[in-house]
Structure formats: C-alpha cells, structure tokens
Length: 236
Image: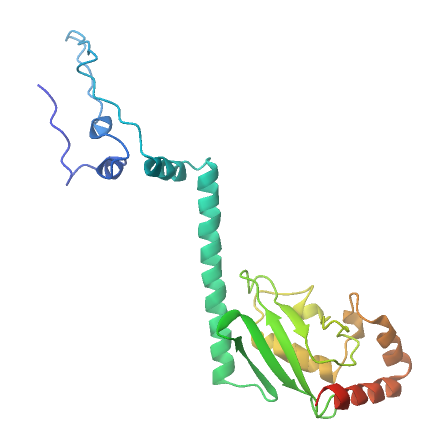
C-alpha cells in the first residue's frame, strides 16, 4: 500500500514550511518508509524518479542564511545584533532625554541636535564661586550606537582656561573616559562637567595640558586670574 502524503495541518516536519515557499520539493520531506524485510526490493527507474529543480538565486540566499557557517549567515547575525544594539542605545538616550526634560538641571540645557538622537548639544553656565562664573560654555556630544556600554565623544566648543580641558576641546575626566560605566546617564556626564568647573581634577589628566597643572598647583591665584580673564573674553 502506498503511503499517503502528509497532511499540511498536522505535519510537523521542520522543512515543511520550506517546501511551501518552494525551497525544496515536497517529495523530499516525506518521512522515510521502512522497508519490509520479507518484501522484495523495488528498483526505481529514471522515469520514476522525481525531477530535480535547481534552487533560484533567492532560494540560495535564504539557504545560506540557514547555514550558520556561511559568510552570509555570519554577516546576517552581526547585522541583527547591530540593529538590536542600536535600538537599545536609542531607547536609553530617549530615556535620558526624558529625564532631563522632566527634571531640568540648574544652569544646564541639553538636548538632541536636529532630532538626531546620537548628537547632542549642551549649554553650561559657569558655576558661582568659581573662576568661570558668568560664562556660557557650549559642549557637543557624539554618542556611539553602543551607548551606554561605551562613552560618548565630548568636545568642549568654547575656549576655556582649564587643566582638564585641552585647547582642542578634549575633556579629561576618569568617570567619563577611562573608568566609564554603563550605568552612567547623560545627567551624570553633565554633573561631572559642572563639577570640573568647580573643582579641577589634576589627578585625572591623561594627555592634557600639564603646564596648566603646574600653574594650578604652584600658583593657584595666577591660574584663577587667567581663568576669569578667558571666561570674560570667550565665555560671553
């Protein structure tokens, strides 16, 4: 007795869906029929064999994705991971933005640049009782798509006389550079920047201006006087 073809409603063969979309022929998916030891072997002729149909280019591409060792499969997996990570980053940045909008920081305004979630601008007022009081400072942020696992690139746009901020606008602060933690938020970053204006951190220098460090440690009055002069000149 010939075996009836599988019922589509009940058949659970893992390749059945592939047959439905034409990736393999249905006769390839039939469960193997165990031969009866007492029955004579039946030889199949070329006329009885089902014709083979080579897969189309689209089907080949799909089959390569199913093969975990293929280059296309690896690229597909990396792209999938990248897209997921990007969405995680977007969600975290949106949360940080909502936090700053709902609870604004005193003396700080920050937000996205032209609705680009990975580019931010901030305006920081110089803290009172500091050489930077009365100044307005502009700061740019470039967030990677791996944020918050990696820190943003920070550029201090306004010229400033500060031992932790280079002439090119690089900021040297361990918490937002070398000792970055994924728990850090944009609010935390801004708080560290404000704190730097209040209390310079000579121990956080990486390749900063060591000349300013010497001035700050050996002649703090000259350091503060120069910082005030630069604030009045460039921070207005």
